[in-house]
Image 1: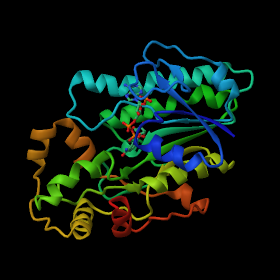
Image 2: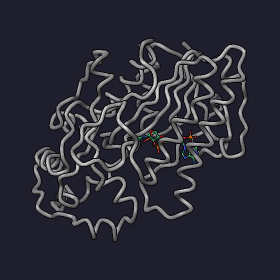
Image 3: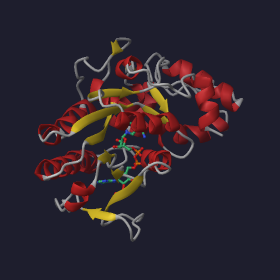
Image 4: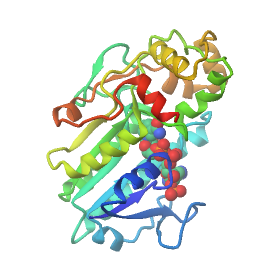
Length: 297
Ligand SMILES: NC(=O)c1ccc[n+]([C@@H]2O[C@H](COP(=O)([O-])OP(=O)(O)OC[C@H]3O[C@@H](n4cnc5c(N)ncnc54)[C@H](OP(=O)(O)O)[C@@H]3O)[C@@H](O)[C@H]2O)c1
C-alpha cells in the first residue's frame, strides 16, 4: 500500500513509520516550514490552505498525526496555534480528500482522550458523551473536521490516543528528570485516572486500524487497565528504583503550568479500549510496570 503520513517526524509518526515501512511505501506530508523536511517529502501548508491533491489520489491510506505540541505552558496565542494546527489541517486534508476522483480508502486520524474531559472514576468507552473544557471542545471539532472524508466514502478512524509512553517525548520524558533525582510524586490528590499507551503498541494499533475493515469512527487507543496517578507514580518509582515522596499539590501544578496542568495532569479520564478489545487487538505492553520498563529501555 502507499501510505501518506502527516506529522511523520513527530514522536508517534516516527514510531509508526518504522512499524509500517517493512511492508508499505510511506510518504511524508510535511509543512514547508518544517525543519525535518527531506527532498522526497510532499509539502503542504495547513495554515494557508495549500495542498497538492495528486498525492492523495495516489495514496491508499492517509495517517494524519500533525498538530502543534501541547507540552508547554499554554497562553492564548499557543492555544490558538494548538487549535488551528488541528482543525485547519484536518479540514484542508479532508476537504481535499472529498474532491479526489480516487480518494484514499482509509484515513487514520489522530484524536485524543481529551475528548472526555474530567470525569472522575466513570468508565469511558467510545460512545460516552464528550466532556467540557478547552481540550474537550477542541477534540470534538477536530473529529468533526474529518466528516468530508467520511462523506466522500473514505473509512475514517478517529484514534482517541491516551498518554503515550516513550522516553523520547511526551509526558513520560518530562517526568524522568525529577523522578530520577528522587523528587517525583503524585500530582494533586493522585486519584485522577491516567489512561496511557506504550508507543510501539500505538504504532501497532495504527497498523491494525489500517488493516481492520470493520473498524471506523472513534477508537480509544489506550491500554486496558488505566491506573490512577498514584498508581502510575508508584510504578514509575519502582521502575526507576527511586522514592516518590514529593507530591505536587494541585495549586502548585497550576501555578507552574497554568491551564495545561488542569487539563492534562489533574483531569481524570478512565478510558477503556472497548472497540480494540472487541476486535481482539493484541497488546504487547498492557501491563504498566512492564510497559514502563520497555519504554525506558
Ligand atoms: N504524544 C501523546 O501523548 C499524544 C496523546 C494524545 C494525542 N496525541 C496526538 O497524536 C498526534 C501525534 O503526536 P506526537 O506526540 O507525535 O506529536 P509531536 O511529536 O509533537 O509531532 C507532531 C507533528 O505535527 C507537525 N506539527 C507540529 N506543529 C505543527 C503545526 N503548528 N501545524 C501543523 N503541523 C504541526 C510536525 O510535523 P512536520 O514538521 O513534519 O509537519 C510534528 O512532527 C498529535 O496530533 C497529538 O495531538 C499525542
